[in-house]
Length: 233
Length: 386
Ligand SMILES: Nc1ncnc2c1ncn2[C@@H]1O[C@H](COP(=O)(O)OP(=O)(O)OP(=O)(O)O)[C@@H](O)[C@H]1O
Ligand SMILES: [Mg+2]
Image 1 (cartoon, each protein chain N blue to C red):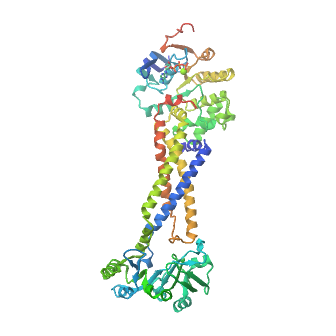
Image 2: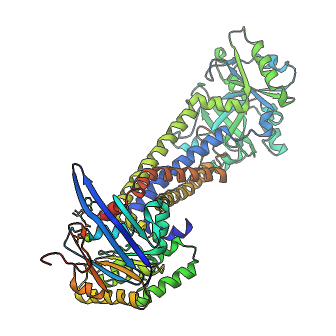
């Protein structure tokens, strides 16, 4: 069996808003191995995004342990985490989140600007990533000049341009029409199968979940045991 | 930092109109600041010329508007170290239509024969000098004044007095060339004196002393002032340079005036730039979240946001300094009104310093909005919808 890249133990996240405390994630125990393609499903508010954000170290847990790619995230400073995320994590949002003033090529180049690569190398990598997502002819377009499906493919290119170990996607097809959604999923499957990327994808869509190798469900902040679905799902 | 320049630059172009307006208002404010600094520099930093260093000015202790008896001239001349003493009497008056500022220039009644000795920097042909000295109604004009008003040797100039109730009919006999103070008209004190009613004769505004050596200045000044300490007309003797500055002080507290205007201008720029940056940052909270997701540290985000403000303020400063240089060049050529502007220089260090001030203001003004945006948690930034 391949190495474990994500490992959580009793991972818990609470949000307190004034008097109220919401437990977004309770005692989650998850293990993801290199080369896996995991889909996280569950009703709205069940804690899917929360779990994904904790894996990406975009937020810190209230309690419990989390190791990603061999790193104990709790022991890392904010600066270390930023550099670590740049090098090892590619994140894909539901709403694309491209920088509107930059072209497709510049958007994809952006994470590489934090590396030591020369400008020529950066552009070469960015171009190759855009070719991979089928947008070699849209390099100079700004997000506004692209369709939603194309924007999401630029976002995927941006997520993979640093050659990360882990791709995290939060409802990547949520804002896309059926065709674009299928393209995006095909792309993610290819990244998993041909390039061996480990992927964790949050989705509402059963079609989308089929692109993944296996599915884990969440319900009311609980990560259900492997193979178990929420009632009335 | 430089590899993020394209991101910074494109961000400043996002809202072109707002950026342009901000740059423009900074440019205008900075051009005024630059002008004030150039004036300040001219008044207080520019060293005195070598000819100036040899001269002292004696005036009434009370103020420039008070006079001294002419008889002092001979007594001052006897002080050791004094080579010569000349009368220098300001004659206000009107030339032609006084509403036209071109017709304004300084007129002095002087000891014509002492001019070449005391003012060696006033160059004129020997024959013109001779004509000027020997004719009672002759006058000499500076080269810049001559070219401004088209004066030629032989032209007649009529001055209608205001402080002195006389009308003087002068003939230009000499045109002198000088680096500065080349917009004056000099004529014979004797002519003025004799035109006055007897009661007003033989009084003088200032005397100019030519010293053997500049080192003697403090001693001679003290000796002269001590000599007249107990007379009804006490004197104040100072170097020509000090005299120029006290003439300015006569107009008001120039230093405090320049300083307070400069402070107001810098504060204005701070507000304008700060307001723009606050707006610009507020619109981009979400982008800050995106950048951080991609691996930008708080520090890098801060640098990108402050870099934008720096670019805007430096751009404004650059345009402003260009304007300053142009305004100063214009003022150097323009007729002198209350003081000689021909030395209004804009050295590189002065423009550079103003530019640095603009940059600092840009950085300071963006510090608070940029810092609060940069340290905001990622998820909070990403939740902001636009
Ligand atoms: N910053 C926050 N402050 C307070 N409560 C929060 C915060 N973020 C999430 N929550 C709460 O935590 C719970 C889980 O939220 P999460 O976003 O993980 O759900 P989700 O499964 O991704 O839902 P969806 O499918 O709608 O995106 C929800 O009840 C939500 O209201
Ligand atoms: Mg969610």
